Image (cartoon, rainbow, N blue to C red):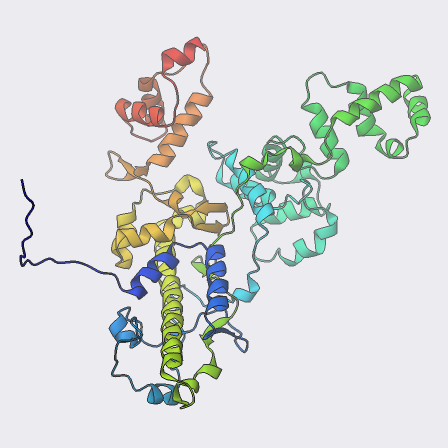
Length: 497
């Protein structure tokens, strides 16, 4: 069949995103560290954009108008396209920059928020991940979070060398946290500390790797030795009772005190070589994810929460003044002016996109804090059901926008560092009309199965009945669904294993 060409008219509706909208969408997805890199790259490639060295605040300068349309920006996407803008008047009047509206509940001083050490934060989260499925009492978990944050680069807890720093930061802390500080400063014996503090120490010191959370090297080695099956008791006794002599290699004196042959002491000391003085070195690198939080949520004295945002730079961005006069200079030819205007357009779009990112991220994070108040006030056990649409409706943004904000972003809280995605979960309806987060139900199912009699494991119906006794109304089918989603085998298979 011969091919024919025809001309026809038709109508089609296409939606094209402006340069501003595309860049804003891209920047919105960036983490704080990625934004820092993007800002640095923009500074290197666009000479019209520079850091305002006179700035003392950590805000990004933006134009006073906040409309995202290119028409309102008054700049050229097409450098050859004519415009009604009088560039001489534009530069004569100067840039009427203004601070973007701060949607946090306070105006945070970013200079007081130093970037957290990623390594320390990773260790804290690595430790807390080991207890995420345990239903620890709120007080114990609060203490554990604080202790995990006190673990230093050597795997030991902060000692007396940091006592002044700890004491300076103690104002406003809860009585339990102050009790921990007293123990770390040797001002109080752990045995006399509150029950929650003692339990938190016990939990931490039984986590992996062995030796984590020790007070010092001797304590670390004792902790490790006691967790190794069949480790010589004589070696442990030397560590516990004759550590000073051991450091001086005075084996003969140790033998004399213990009334044992020197060879026995020498052999016992050789066993200590099996211990690792650096417990953190036992953690596989693959299990550590280097995370720097994008937000910090802190509780104020009146019980409310404030949200701080890392917005990627320590100074304002502004247009380079030296280029302002070039567009009015007759010695600059038309092609050069087109290049300057194009770079000016790019610089302003970039600054607007960064300001828009800040506005949207603070809106979303504050909405999360309001809807998950119990989580931030009382701990992860009080997570409420919440979906992206809930936040989108509250902040009057598209669900896809909220998804970009929460994807890959992290927040530092009093209970550790969490990805924003953690705050979203479906709910299971209860008889009284309330809903319980499926995360809480899944954790409860895990807890029941982990503590079951392996010779007579729990069926899905029995788990449902036990959950009801805990105040959680969950159907057997729902238990089955969640169990399979978590990769937990059926009761018959668990019994045969």
